Length: 192
Image 1: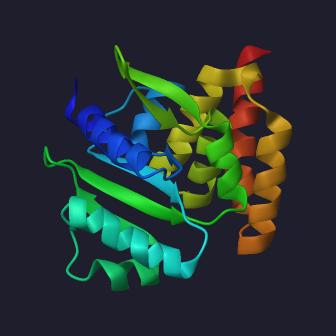
Image 2: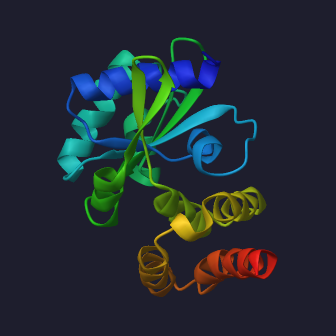
């Protein structure tokens, strides 16, 4: 198994043991839904409902996995991120999600088999597009194109557009929608 998959499996086992909802959202998910590309870390979104619960969660995770930052509790308060390392040295970036949109991400997550008998929870292709559209870096835009080309008509366009519309309004960033729509238009032009 490749090192990123090993790290994802290790994190899965820990989160599953502690009944923490999660979905892999980064490059590992892109490998399933979009173009194959090299990724150096594992990106995960985990569920937490209360700020107090977040602090307990940070402590629980950083007692098991070494933190990559000096003060993980303060860092998590400021960024809603927990940065740790898996036992094989692969970086794991854990986003502390709230249960609104993210609750749907966890409900829509699919099982992804890393190897026989080892499955993890992967975000849906639609949710990966939404995450990538919000992040908006050049690699994210490229990832959206790859996902759209590979998944095409299987995508739930209404779901994607509804959430992107809400995030564009909430964040005040209209380009969030355009990042998907441009990829969709290219896909339609190419596939007639």
